[in-house]
Image (cartoon, rainbow, N blue to C red; front, side, top):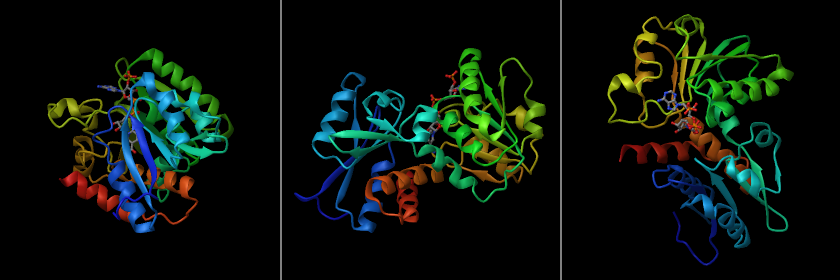
Length: 295
Ligand code: NAP
């Protein structure tokens, strides 16, 4: 990274906590490669100060912000307007400066999510999404654009699941994608797993290294015993790489995808929106993130 000078521009990430984020490493590596005199900082932020911090950062000419857990919905209130995708899923992970000290709210998670699936032919396929939180919204929205036949969402909380399905059905109407919800605590999900072409884990199960292996596998180990080697497993988690769940897939010779590509791609799309440049060095972003994960 070149020296920070009086001309260096500020960009950054708002969330709580942010100290484990890979984004500063990835972004600053990309800026150095692109010759952009920008510096990306992780900015921890309490909920009560969020709006004030966002307004102030715009006033000091911050060139762009990413937003992470737990504020992706909260920041909708601080945006002058939203891109279509951000409006559809009611979540913002990228703030773009606009005139009169305002921010535009965008969402690059959806495109970041779909990027690693672009070379898989998912037309007419059956998909399972485990979890129905924020990243599941981005996943379902992304899958809608890939011409899939059916998306089954497995949730654990009936109310959250029903609300999620209602919202997502509204979005999928145009594409004729069937969306169904299953309560994983009440119904035997094994037949659905065995018939799926692609299964996506959008829960944090698998992130905690100190947790017993059995509790670190979505839906428990037994469910995966008869997993077909034709099923693709996609875990949005990027550390550890691979998760215990993806290891099961690898042992069964399934194609597996971890969350690092999504992380890199959503970051690269944010840089595109802020800088107007089309060629973002994603390979540099990925290698710097990988190097950091190994430390
Ligand atoms: P979130 O909004 O909190 O949603 C998590 C979902 O998982 C909720 O449906 C939650 O159910 C469910 N869940 C949580 N713990 C569970 C458990 N023990 N058993 C069953 N279900 C459980 O979180 P998120 O923002 O979607 O993030 C989820 C994961 O995706 C995280 O690991 C995050 O790091 C990863 N992620 C990766 C990327 C990337 O770029 N690769 C981007 C975004 C997220 P309840 O509603 O019942 O609590």
